[in-house]
Length: 259
Picture 1 (cartoon, rainbow, N blue to C red):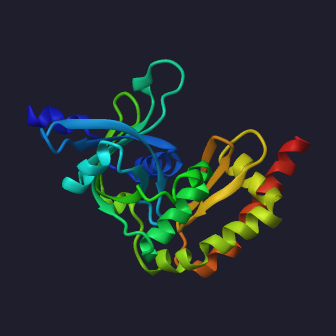
Picture 2 (cartoon, rainbow, N blue to C red; picture 1 turned 30 degrees about the vertical axis):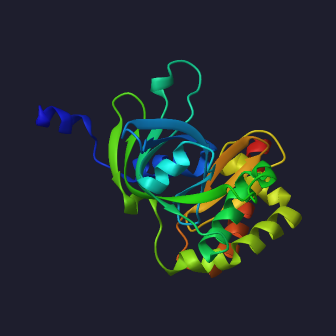
Protein backbone atom coordinates (compact mmCIF):
# COMPACT_ATOMS: atom_id res chain seq x y z
CA UNK A 1 0.00 0.00 0.00
CA UNK A 2 2.81 2.44 0.90
CA UNK A 3 4.59 1.76 -2.40
CA UNK A 4 1.40 2.52 -4.31
CA UNK A 5 0.97 5.81 -2.46
CA UNK A 6 4.55 6.80 -3.23
CA UNK A 7 4.00 6.05 -6.91
CA UNK A 8 1.17 8.60 -7.04
CA UNK A 9 3.45 11.45 -5.92
CA UNK A 10 5.70 12.85 -8.63
CA UNK A 11 9.15 14.26 -7.99
CA UNK A 12 8.88 17.96 -7.20
CA UNK A 13 10.58 19.90 -9.98
CA UNK A 14 10.91 23.55 -11.00
CA UNK A 15 7.71 23.38 -13.07
CA UNK A 16 5.69 22.15 -10.10
CA UNK A 17 7.13 24.84 -7.84
CA UNK A 18 6.31 27.50 -10.44
CA UNK A 19 2.71 26.28 -10.63
CA UNK A 20 2.39 26.21 -6.84
CA UNK A 21 3.73 29.75 -6.53
CA UNK A 22 1.40 30.91 -9.30
CA UNK A 23 -1.62 29.50 -7.47
CA UNK A 24 -0.44 31.06 -4.22
CA UNK A 25 0.40 34.50 -5.57
CA UNK A 26 -2.64 34.80 -7.82
CA UNK A 27 -5.29 33.64 -5.32
CA UNK A 28 -8.04 36.13 -4.47
CA UNK A 29 -9.71 33.83 -1.97
CA UNK A 30 -9.28 30.41 -0.44
CA UNK A 31 -10.95 27.77 1.73
CA UNK A 32 -9.58 27.98 5.28
CA UNK A 33 -9.87 24.92 7.51
CA UNK A 34 -9.46 25.30 11.28
CA UNK A 35 -10.24 23.24 14.39
CA UNK A 36 -13.38 24.21 16.27
CA UNK A 37 -12.35 24.95 19.88
CA UNK A 38 -15.44 23.47 21.50
CA UNK A 39 -15.40 20.14 19.69
CA UNK A 40 -12.09 19.79 17.84
CA UNK A 41 -14.07 19.24 14.67
CA UNK A 42 -12.79 20.66 11.37
CA UNK A 43 -14.41 23.92 10.29
CA UNK A 44 -13.99 25.28 6.77
CA UNK A 45 -14.87 28.74 5.48
CA UNK A 46 -13.99 31.07 2.63
CA UNK A 47 -11.54 33.90 3.27
CA UNK A 48 -9.99 36.65 1.20
CA UNK A 49 -6.29 36.09 0.54
CA UNK A 50 -3.17 38.08 -0.27
CA UNK A 51 0.51 37.24 0.21
CA UNK A 52 3.29 38.80 2.21
CA UNK A 53 6.36 39.82 0.24
CA UNK A 54 8.03 36.45 0.95
CA UNK A 55 5.02 34.46 -0.22
CA UNK A 56 3.30 33.59 3.07
CA UNK A 57 -0.50 33.90 2.81
CA UNK A 58 -2.27 36.77 4.59
CA UNK A 59 -5.91 36.80 5.68
CA UNK A 60 -8.00 39.64 7.11
CA UNK A 61 -10.70 38.28 9.41
CA UNK A 62 -13.26 39.50 11.94
CA UNK A 63 -13.56 38.30 15.54
CA UNK A 64 -17.22 37.72 14.71
CA UNK A 65 -16.20 34.92 12.34
CA UNK A 66 -16.03 31.42 13.77
CA UNK A 67 -12.59 30.76 12.30
CA UNK A 68 -10.90 33.69 14.11
CA UNK A 69 -11.28 32.45 17.71
CA UNK A 70 -10.45 28.99 16.39
CA UNK A 71 -7.10 30.25 15.07
CA UNK A 72 -6.39 32.02 18.37
CA UNK A 73 -7.11 28.82 20.29
CA UNK A 74 -5.16 26.55 17.95
CA UNK A 75 -3.00 28.04 15.16
CA UNK A 76 -2.95 24.87 13.11
CA UNK A 77 -4.84 25.38 9.86
CA UNK A 78 -5.01 24.49 6.20
CA UNK A 79 -5.64 26.71 3.19
CA UNK A 80 -6.94 25.43 -0.15
CA UNK A 81 -6.25 27.63 -3.19
CA UNK A 82 -7.17 27.28 -6.85
CA UNK A 83 -10.18 28.29 -8.92
CA UNK A 84 -12.01 25.72 -11.06
CA UNK A 85 -12.72 26.60 -14.67
CA UNK A 86 -14.94 25.02 -17.25
CA UNK A 87 -15.67 21.31 -17.13
CA UNK A 88 -14.65 18.98 -14.33
CA UNK A 89 -13.54 21.07 -11.33
CA UNK A 90 -11.17 18.27 -10.28
CA UNK A 91 -9.22 18.65 -13.52
CA UNK A 92 -7.99 22.11 -12.50
CA UNK A 93 -4.88 22.77 -10.39
CA UNK A 94 -5.18 23.41 -6.66
CA UNK A 95 -2.79 23.84 -3.76
CA UNK A 96 -3.35 22.81 -0.15
CA UNK A 97 -1.09 24.50 2.41
CA UNK A 98 -0.53 23.19 5.92
CA UNK A 99 0.11 26.29 8.04
CA UNK A 100 0.59 27.78 11.46
CA UNK A 101 -1.39 30.99 11.88
CA UNK A 102 0.28 34.00 13.47
CA UNK A 103 -1.80 36.97 14.66
CA UNK A 104 -0.16 40.27 13.73
CA UNK A 105 -0.33 42.94 16.40
CA UNK A 106 -1.92 46.12 15.08
CA UNK A 107 0.69 48.84 14.60
CA UNK A 108 3.64 46.45 14.49
CA UNK A 109 6.00 46.57 11.51
CA UNK A 110 4.76 43.16 10.38
CA UNK A 111 1.13 44.33 10.55
CA UNK A 112 1.81 47.58 8.69
CA UNK A 113 3.50 45.71 5.85
CA UNK A 114 0.86 42.98 5.74
CA UNK A 115 -2.02 45.47 5.74
CA UNK A 116 -0.38 47.48 2.96
CA UNK A 117 0.06 44.42 0.77
CA UNK A 118 -3.40 43.08 1.57
CA UNK A 119 -5.11 46.36 0.68
CA UNK A 120 -3.02 46.79 -2.47
CA UNK A 121 -4.39 43.43 -3.53
CA UNK A 122 -7.91 43.82 -2.11
CA UNK A 123 -8.65 47.57 -2.10
CA UNK A 124 -12.33 47.11 -1.25
CA UNK A 125 -11.25 45.66 2.10
CA UNK A 126 -10.19 49.18 3.06
CA UNK A 127 -13.84 49.78 4.03
CA UNK A 128 -13.47 47.54 7.09
CA UNK A 129 -9.75 46.80 7.58
CA UNK A 130 -9.43 49.55 10.18
CA UNK A 131 -12.35 48.39 12.31
CA UNK A 132 -11.34 47.22 15.76
CA UNK A 133 -12.67 43.68 15.45
CA UNK A 134 -10.67 42.92 12.28
CA UNK A 135 -7.25 41.32 12.46
CA UNK A 136 -4.62 40.15 10.02
CA UNK A 137 -3.15 36.69 10.36
CA UNK A 138 -0.02 35.55 8.57
CA UNK A 139 -0.22 31.85 7.69
CA UNK A 140 3.22 30.29 7.95
CA UNK A 141 3.42 27.43 5.40
CA UNK A 142 4.95 24.26 6.82
CA UNK A 143 4.37 22.06 3.79
CA UNK A 144 1.97 21.79 0.87
CA UNK A 145 0.26 19.40 -1.49
CA UNK A 146 -0.08 20.39 -5.13
CA UNK A 147 -2.56 18.72 -7.44
CA UNK A 148 -1.86 19.94 -10.95
CA UNK A 149 -4.69 17.91 -12.46
CA UNK A 150 -5.28 14.19 -12.85
CA UNK A 151 -2.09 12.21 -12.17
CA UNK A 152 -0.05 15.31 -11.26
CA UNK A 153 0.41 15.25 -7.49
CA UNK A 154 3.40 16.78 -5.71
CA UNK A 155 4.54 17.38 -2.15
CA UNK A 156 6.28 20.67 -1.37
CA UNK A 157 8.19 22.01 1.62
CA UNK A 158 8.30 25.53 3.01
CA UNK A 159 11.45 26.55 1.04
CA UNK A 160 9.62 25.69 -2.19
CA UNK A 161 7.04 28.40 -1.44
CA UNK A 162 8.55 31.03 0.85
CA UNK A 163 11.46 33.25 -0.18
CA UNK A 164 14.20 33.95 2.34
CA UNK A 165 17.32 36.06 2.57
CA UNK A 166 18.16 39.77 2.88
CA UNK A 167 16.45 40.59 -0.42
CA UNK A 168 13.04 40.19 1.24
CA UNK A 169 13.54 43.03 3.72
CA UNK A 170 15.35 45.14 1.12
CA UNK A 171 12.41 44.94 -1.25
CA UNK A 172 9.90 45.48 1.52
CA UNK A 173 11.47 48.86 2.28
CA UNK A 174 11.16 50.12 -1.30
CA UNK A 175 8.25 48.11 -2.71
CA UNK A 176 5.43 50.59 -2.14
CA UNK A 177 7.23 53.50 -3.76
CA UNK A 178 8.11 51.30 -6.75
CA UNK A 179 4.51 50.11 -7.09
CA UNK A 180 3.14 53.66 -6.92
CA UNK A 181 5.72 54.93 -9.42
CA UNK A 182 4.99 52.18 -11.93
CA UNK A 183 1.22 52.61 -11.62
CA UNK A 184 1.46 56.39 -12.00
CA UNK A 185 3.99 56.65 -14.82
CA UNK A 186 4.41 53.30 -16.60
CA UNK A 187 1.04 51.77 -17.34
CA UNK A 188 2.24 51.01 -20.85
CA UNK A 189 5.04 48.83 -19.48
CA UNK A 190 2.62 47.08 -17.10
CA UNK A 191 0.37 46.29 -20.05
CA UNK A 192 3.37 44.65 -21.75
CA UNK A 193 4.05 42.55 -18.65
CA UNK A 194 0.43 41.39 -18.53
CA UNK A 195 -0.07 40.73 -22.24
CA UNK A 196 3.33 39.36 -23.25
CA UNK A 197 4.63 37.61 -20.15
CA UNK A 198 1.36 36.41 -18.62
CA UNK A 199 -0.73 36.06 -21.78
CA UNK A 200 -3.50 38.05 -20.09
CA UNK A 201 -6.20 39.85 -22.04
CA UNK A 202 -7.90 43.16 -21.40
CA UNK A 203 -6.75 46.59 -20.28
CA UNK A 204 -6.40 48.49 -17.03
CA UNK A 205 -3.63 46.36 -15.53
CA UNK A 206 -1.76 47.73 -12.54
CA UNK A 207 0.84 46.30 -10.17
CA UNK A 208 -0.46 45.12 -6.80
CA UNK A 209 2.80 43.74 -5.46
CA UNK A 210 6.47 43.18 -6.19
CA UNK A 211 8.67 40.48 -4.71
CA UNK A 212 11.95 38.71 -5.40
CA UNK A 213 10.34 36.21 -7.79
CA UNK A 214 8.10 38.52 -9.78
CA UNK A 215 5.01 40.71 -9.66
CA UNK A 216 1.26 40.46 -9.14
CA UNK A 217 -0.92 42.36 -11.60
CA UNK A 218 -4.61 43.21 -11.22
CA UNK A 219 -7.34 44.54 -13.48
CA UNK A 220 -10.67 44.73 -11.69
CA UNK A 221 -11.29 41.23 -10.36
CA UNK A 222 -8.73 39.70 -12.72
CA UNK A 223 -5.32 38.72 -11.41
CA UNK A 224 -2.21 37.46 -13.15
CA UNK A 225 1.25 36.48 -12.00
CA UNK A 226 4.42 37.47 -13.87
CA UNK A 227 7.75 35.90 -12.91
CA UNK A 228 11.09 37.58 -13.46
CA UNK A 229 13.56 35.74 -15.74
CA UNK A 230 15.63 35.07 -12.60
CA UNK A 231 14.83 35.72 -8.92
CA UNK A 232 16.26 38.99 -7.64
CA UNK A 233 19.32 38.69 -5.44
CA UNK A 234 19.13 42.32 -4.27
CA UNK A 235 16.57 45.15 -4.39
CA UNK A 236 18.79 47.23 -6.69
CA UNK A 237 18.18 44.66 -9.46
CA UNK A 238 14.45 45.47 -9.62
CA UNK A 239 14.55 48.54 -11.85
CA UNK A 240 16.90 47.07 -14.52
CA UNK A 241 14.81 43.90 -14.68
CA UNK A 242 11.55 45.85 -15.13
CA UNK A 243 13.15 47.99 -17.86
CA UNK A 244 14.55 44.96 -19.70
CA UNK A 245 11.24 43.11 -19.55
CA UNK A 246 9.35 46.12 -20.91
CA UNK A 247 11.79 46.46 -23.79
CA UNK A 248 11.92 42.78 -24.69
CA UNK A 249 8.15 42.38 -24.42
CA UNK A 250 7.52 45.44 -26.60
CA UNK A 251 10.02 44.24 -29.20
CA UNK A 252 8.40 40.81 -29.31
CA UNK A 253 4.96 42.37 -29.71
CA UNK A 254 6.18 44.52 -32.65
CA UNK A 255 7.74 41.51 -34.32
CA UNK A 256 4.55 39.52 -33.91
CA UNK A 257 2.45 42.32 -35.39
CA UNK A 258 4.68 42.43 -38.46
CA UNK A 259 4.29 38.74 -39.22
